[in-house]
Amino acid sequence: MSELFWLLLMTTLLLLGSALASGTEAALMTVSPVRVHQLAQGRIAGGRSLQRIKHRMGRALTVIVILNNVVNIFGSLMLGGYAAWVIGDRYGLANQWVAAFSTLFTLLVICFGEILPKAFGTRLNESVALLAAPVLMLLMRLLMPLVVLLERLMPVLTASNTLTTDEREIRLLARLGSQQGQIEADEAAMISKVFQLNDLTARDLMIPRVAAPTLAADVPLTAVRAELLATDQDWWVVLGEEVDEVVGVVSREDLLAALLEGRGSARVCSLVDPVRYVPEMIRADRLLGSFRRARDSVRVVVDEFGAFTGVVGPDALLAVLAGWRRFAEEPPHPVGEERA
Image (cartoon, rainbow, N blue to C red; front, side):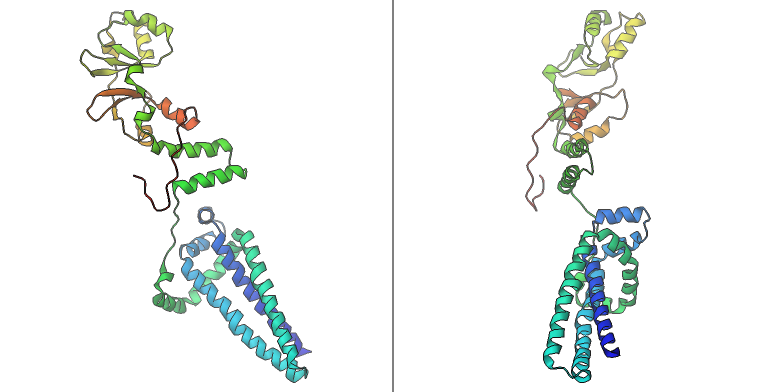
């Protein structure tokens, strides 16, 4: 009875060892690198160890493979020899029973040592990875001489994994998060439109010169009083006598304040703010960063020759982000092809 007990105990331990190795491997391979970074930043138990393991996955997988093969190969050989002695010599059964035991053990390893543990490890990857990380770090230190030797023989194991992503992946993650209810649909749409800013230029967003609100520089305030009261326009571009001569930009607030102060005879050019020029091919994301002060609410757009071609304000960028203005989505770039 004692020999049969030890046989069952060895079988159980080998199945448990194979299951732990397979489940840990599946969990480490499927846990999200972004989630691992969040766990490490949040000081979750095992998070820092898991982050170090994910950074050197080649070394971690080497240790897991070594342990898994020790259990599945060396352990199976030892178990097979012990089973042959117990079944054949101690109980005097035919060799067919030894073959039946080996077949049964193989099926148990496939089902309970590989398939089920990997399924559970994939489904509960975060919890399994956090639990296994400290133990795996200890095993990596204990097996360091063997691991270093294998890394010298196979340099591919020394490659480190860095947390990287790209625009296409972030768009996809936002869309999937919206579909699964993790983030709001409008938030996912906003994320997509933020990336669209890099594909637009000031020329795409500007009000063309022919439609831009303008005032003559030498006009007195009394001459534009009726226009100020009748319109809701917030600013004007002040033009001089020469072609493409932009004197400045003036706001409706400043003009009305001057009229209330009794300065109706003052000319418009005396109230202008300095002009800030931007090239028409500047990217919209860089243009957004240039709007820093409230009074700098308008940019005058010029072409490559310095000619006045239009005006653009932060409201145009807000319209893109809010979805009020729609532009054709840029077609996806083939893998490996860089954007011009």
